[in-house]
Image (cartoon, rainbow, N blue to C red; front, side, top):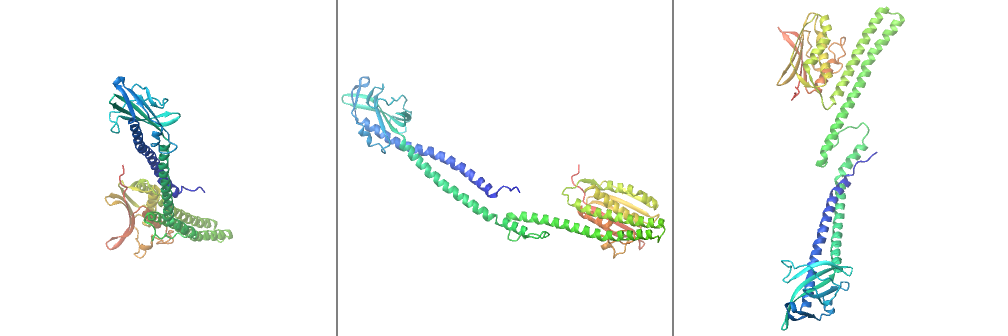
Length: 469
């Protein structure tokens, strides 16, 4: 079985990836800022060394005729070297680039002093390569004046970058180790928090797995975290629907086995009686035909009752006109109405309801069939479909004998026919299940006239479909 995405991995990735990006950006920024800070600190040392060299210069002559002299031993720079690996080089030149002292192979400065030097001196700093090493160079324009002359010296002091880079890497590595510890701590906290937060889910899973196959009792919501309550409620709702479906299936199987057993037994007895010659063949066939018809009606009605439950489970119902379904069923039952010479009256108005067309037709068929069956020959039968602010209404009024008051409450129960000889008792049960599925109501009421029962009114009320274009 394919496993889903791990919540722990999703949270770790969702937290650690942004944290890692932030750490990488901060590390790059820290590296640049550290390097700038170290350059600023060590640039001061370069400037101090250049000024120290400038103090040891002498000049003879003035301006363009000035000749600079310098006696600067290399040992004078050793005091400015930070460690044994860092090397310092210098060059003293005049403004025309003529070497006065120092390393001749150190390239003469060709740049210019910035308008606002970083220090109170005519100084400039730049990076270059000298003797295959990256160096940081400080250039100082140093005025030199003596009683015998006046001139301008260009003093260049270069320092290799090993110490600066080593200190920068050390600071960066210390930062990264600290951040690695922080990331590890975050990962540990996420794992522990997820483990603790998902504990109710695992407990719920164990409870469901430990249940017997047919146990559909609701899950307890007491003690469940607030975020888990929607899942528990949804699970309980699904289990309630499953329990309802299973109960309907059990009832259908039970009722089917019970109700069909009787007509099948009668049919078997009639066939055996005919085979023995107890009755005339024509009479035997007529009796068998009646038994088969009753069994067929019973089977069809039980299948209709099961289909109502199937359609009830559909989440979205289409919109159909109740009046159209009633007129179609009235036309279908017209031969029965004409056979009993019934004075039939129908009045309909458009009544769109959200329901499957089969439901509306089955509802109208059962109500009209019952009304035709109980209306005496030559009697009256009226059907009205109304639509108003309170919804749609279907009223079927027959002119039959009505019903005893004690029978009205149980007529909607399956197999509770008012006359067991004339029906199976499923018609009204089907009507009630359809009406319940559509969110409506159904009522049976005796109609009185001159203190006598003049017939029975069956009234169905259904909500109208809203926003119908």
